[in-house]
Image (cartoon, rainbow, N blue to C red):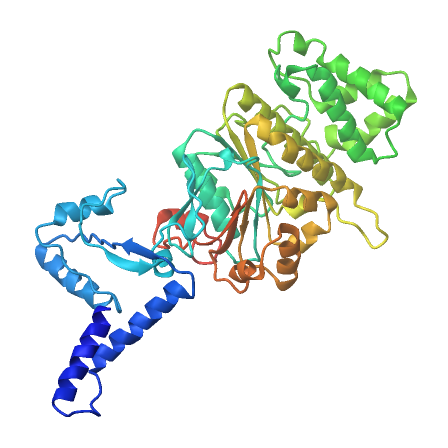
Length: 503
């Protein structure tokens, strides 16, 4: 009404001067146009009128710098005009702070569409209490802080092609956990790349190979073994699985299991009375098998011979490493094919029981398995799976379901997503993971992951030809694009990077 009144007065003055063809001034025409659009928004587009106020507080180290920044800010605000609050700085600061109070009495009208642009919570955020840093939200540029222990289950995967930044993300999480708490950290390292970081953090590196001088006794047992419920019986079941890995699924029948159970009880009979001194070893089990009258017992002892008194006897010695260290890294790069079945079995058994001991002490455990696809059975052309991988894959799947109540999380790291998805076990683990970090993906992997996780094409664009350190993070039901550009001129970066010449 005000604009129309001004336009009418201008036209009347022009007519009184016989200027019948004169046009309205450009500024008045623009005001009429804006006013018409405003009325159309209200009457035709179901908009509403809102009162709005935008207050910005900027700090500088000196008055001169503050004046320069103020002029720069005013010149970069596009069509918006900012006015400096003279003698109202304190009121402006209190308006900006998250008190929910407005101390500046200056508002203007905005439509609901314009007001929505100013809403601070229009993008999805991940900010948990007590969490750790995982990067910056690519949309809002706010920090992504995630507490995996607060999720329905804290298990997860870190996925990406080689060079996309997945190892850096895993190492950063390990470093932050090591420096910010007292949780136990266990790493399975098939490529020998976590050693520098683990040593710098004061951890223990356990090298598992035929010629290693670091020994883990496969027969180690404690009162807490298997949660303290019939530890010898559970250890007997472990030994049966061990023999089955060595002799094959058809090599252990009911008679053989009875012999193994009897001999296992024999070698533990004295030790479990007090759990003092050295526990028995695989060599003691071998000797007890040889004492039995049944020829079957001698056959089992013969199958175990290579791993007890033969060339692969690395697990038949007393443990000579600090398995109670807060940070443990299992280096399995030199684990040969012959030692792999028993090596993985012993290592996974040791990890599970460390988790159980930690739960009894009220301590969280975080397990990281790099190149996790190595642990899953892959189907051959005839549809049969590799039996040597059956137990390790099934073990991990059981841990995936049980670790939540054991105060533990399990993280799988792999670049071969498509190969993992060939395993039904791995596919179920991926589908049931509450935490996922996805870096740059191969085209076939993107399609499979999108179907498995139900992500949109727009979301998967963030993992298509993405630079290193950028991708998608899934936390519960939230999927957020992230950026994590770690500064390269730091000692921590040199401990974590795998690029040649940077470490």
